[in-house]
Length: 216
Image (cartoon, rainbow, N blue to C red; front, side):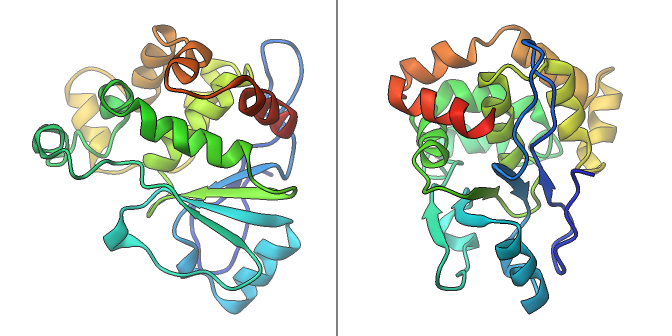
């Protein structure tokens, strides 16, 4: 039920309906994760608008970006930090990039970029927010992980949400190391206090409260 059929895109789903540790559920229609919206047909854009999306948070790099139609806020928040050539010399090549293995190193290296992505969702105008990268899997998955953990979604549900994006070559790489994407995400969350991390990165009380109000 969380998968959305927006013609042209292949990996779009609502982050609503997920249980939290407090016995609540995330709100339907508040935040959607997906792949590049430029893939949408005219009918796909109509479906996006009809679903209530009013803001798009674009996590892609400058050379990956496209445009969106008028009437929808388009916030560009590049997550990667490609100018840090030392970091990407290690993480930008090979199958380990297309896996959550790089999440914790990226979080440690680029706290301000992760914070800006979270703030963009918090400060979006009323209505639904689409967060996306190119394939809707890894960058969108990292920001979704932070958002969902912040509002208390269980780690198991967060890991299961990531896996709904399907398999890629990175999954075989992880299997060869005796692990899986789900296990890597669970291990990352087990050692990460997301609220403390975001506060240290500069996300303030008002934005944290706004996120909780939006998502739950």
